[in-house]
Image (cartoon, rainbow, N blue to C red; front, side, top):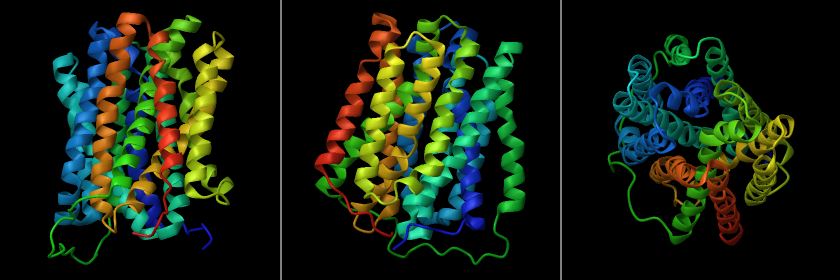
Length: 384
């Protein structure tokens, strides 16, 4: 069937929810150098914030089938947004690292619930067209990512110690979305009498799951520490380097919106392989660059490559779930949590000991692992 769909009210509400949490990710991830400067910590300690987000994603992964079963996917997304907003307020109002770490955990849990619910809801709602709908929803979410990066970096240039205040912009937007976007008069959700989705998943699922871990690990290693590498190579300030990461988010936005359209003639796995290959080429150019212009172009290409990987890799995992999307996405969140918890932290440890440039050798290794697994384990995406 044609991979087209109607962007209905459901699409825009879910996409905007995802954009709100991506605003936070866009401002928080690339701002690790700013956070280090504020708190006077090492790369290793700063990397623990990524670990906190990863642990949150793991917890959300285990909670996902139960929350979806108890409240339904629609309510689950709003619950996730409330938890996210609570953690964000604590993060902004709590300067020391021993408070920002648990705040990041809470915010990350809410973020993961929102993203997990988006994947299962859209996959169910749009069926085969989810291969286009989910990347495009993520494309809208990338607008939030870019705005977050640009806003936080810009505030840091003029007011170095007030950059965290900009993150609070997500709160009134979330409240407004709830007031205008929630379904009024909808029928009450009745939990399935069989209980939450459970059971064993296939070997193909778990092998592909490892590939998913590699994809997300490379993405977060780049997004968390690209500003640090750029500062090291080009000699800019932490604030300017953070703003430059807008190129990464811009590439992700363009790729997510147009990727599914331009690549729709190719099979799902072929699309994913092409995206991973583009990320690899863009990363090599960025890694060896000592020019701001070349680095920005390279970051844009990396963003294009990363853009549709999460959505397509998640759809692959759903296709291996034997009709249990909530369970599959819960395990997908577990994979994302492991990746987010370990990759930025490990890169930070390696950066402290060998320098950020040498530490980045882990990224092409991860990309090669992801490419190999997709090549060796073919999938067949299905409606869930």
